[in-house]
Length: 426
Figure: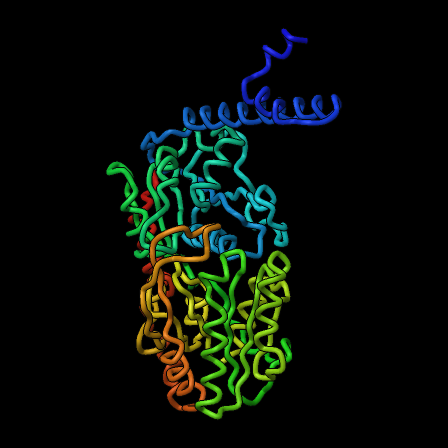
């Protein structure tokens, strides 16, 4: 028994020493600690092999284009991966997809639009996952999907400085793309000189433009309908829905307009306490409706097409998919005037809310330091009140969305950008 004890790894013996109780409990603790030690060693070995196979080699880009991401998930990141895949298909290039949804616990709610790469196919890999997920995927696969392929990391970040823990992942990529210049600036600060970081916004022009259908969602035909939507998995602190609710309530009081705010929430089942707090804050207010239905991308587009205004008092965004989709669908937008969304929020069709930059607090799960915007609720309320009450002005704002020249809304500009960023070697 003594020789067996001495042969155990130190972490196992340390854990066993902490166990007080029956011999059975001690044996169970030893087994558990031994399993943990084996798992940790396997993870270290897997990551070491991944770095050996996938380390940056500056290989040329060849076909097909494989997009790695959460293709099957009803999630902003999933929609981003799907849009990139459709964009390259629109460019006439063969596209493959690797869906990681189930590996991170996302339900697979959407069918696969593209097949995974065939055995022996090389080409270029674009991993639409941030460094923590990239490192985990590379470790679990021991880097095999990256071996012999040019690898582009498509990363998004919402603050001015990317997390230092991301630095390790640069060794696995040839270059990095981001959905906005704001995100590119943040990641570029951390990137080694050899890794190019480029903005590559999503091809929103591919999204359909459905006709409004208020009956589908039980929305009133008369009055002004405002939409705010957010995913609690992206944190309520960053999305800041409470401020938007207050701004809407004040705007209704100021304007006297007949209006309804639809508050579309994703991830409510994972954060029941946050949902309960939001529900309590609007109890008895007939002008606000919380919606937790699980909508497909098509239904979400239909909902957006059926409202008059889209509202977001986010503290920061790395792209701002909802607001970009709203502009594409011809909707005036009102949002915090900071971070990536100002890159496509044309003043002719959008209203930017004043803000103060404050330290990040209360969101240690994802965002631990830095600063973000605290939207001025009074300014938001005043601007929204005018949008609610001035039908002619609101119509002018809506019409101006068609003249927005951002690359996300322009097919030829987006395809030209891809040709510059990713010249394919025959």
